[in-house]
Image 1 (tube, helix red, strand yellow):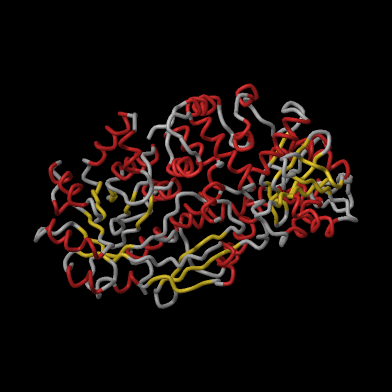
Image 2 (cartoon, chains in turn cyan, yellow):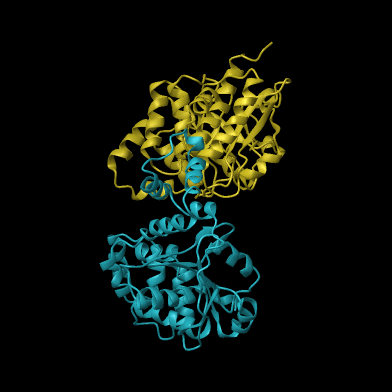
Length: 281
Length: 313
């Protein structure tokens, strides 16, 4: 099992930035040698696809879950033009795996077979402070436990089945009762909360720099919480992908990683070149 | 003599440049820069010292960062030309850290006409001591920096400078909150008695070098000051609301408030403390880099005042 830890590091921005700029990376090479038979005359695109296939069959790790969810939900059911995805957003003491925003926003917590449920309750608690829809995505084998824990709650439960489809076992229900102003506010960047406050109040707080943030938060709490939530969602949704045309061409296996890697046009070009290159011994 | 050892991060270079620009350091201060990348700020800093006819030591084969690699692939011919031009100035002290490539690197320097006795050499690793003795023989470098250990002191007896990290680093900024103040250094009092020409430390930054910073939960301002016995202590002014990475400006305000109250009770004046007080009065937040910059400047300026005899009774 511990040998597979390499696979957790492979599908990350750092490795791919290295790969597309230097055209080699020792971690990628080790993965190819270990997980792809007859790799001699294959191009990098097929090699990545083979390694991903290994994940699918033998080692459904967090990246595999995230990427599957991402492809099925964002690119399958919705579209890049109407939907924004976020990842690794700090919420209170947790970091949310995945947030999908279209008309409404849903926070997803992923628990693969490799994870424990130890922190799950706290994580769910935290997400409800910032989002009114929360969903757990886990495996079939974890389902009985998840059901036991959450059957009378508003939490959604989805299963990534052994056939790699997403099966919704419990629909998430909206819960606005646990939203907290300061947790919502802290997810926003400066220009986002300024934008929001200005739109609502027609002006911004006038104070020195030490008190400005606190004052802005103070103003935010004066907005009715349902409205404040809508404002927050609208701001977060604006954090969408640029270079949509280039992004379309990214292979299925890399969709999640590239979406959150802030690639520029030149990076897409380098990625393409890299993918088409053949493996050199 | 005091030789503050800094890495060439933006705020460290700016600290040195502003000290020189505002004539805040005397000739008892010889700053050392270990550059981490070939930047415009590095050139401007060297330029400022040359203009002001103040000495600055620049390490040519740094052991942290990507300077060597970056400079080998650098396309800006102008930068390289200006850099080697600046190195020829009498105010720039060419410096070298003993390492596994020292033989080649030193030979290259010597063949470029650098004399042994113009060099500043840093010995931090016992493994390269014999190498050092071979390379220099009986020609002594201008200064040789060594740790306090006897293994070094036995072998290097002349023109030696004490190099020790006096900054006790905590894992997180918030951890300084419980410390309040602690002893920092007595090297400025005892270096001569201990047989050194001068002493060196990593100011309030510490020796450890990490490539990437991250947003801290707490803001800490590290201020060095003299105790009644002239030993140096360091006081940590830390923000209160340290639950997450948000609102650094507010946290700076909290830490600064404490600094302002403390300063009221003490007779301590430097250019940088005055800058801190300006931010306090105006309610302005200059960014975390500037906070570090001002704290470094304060330390070095204070030592310069000490060598000016400002604290003699």
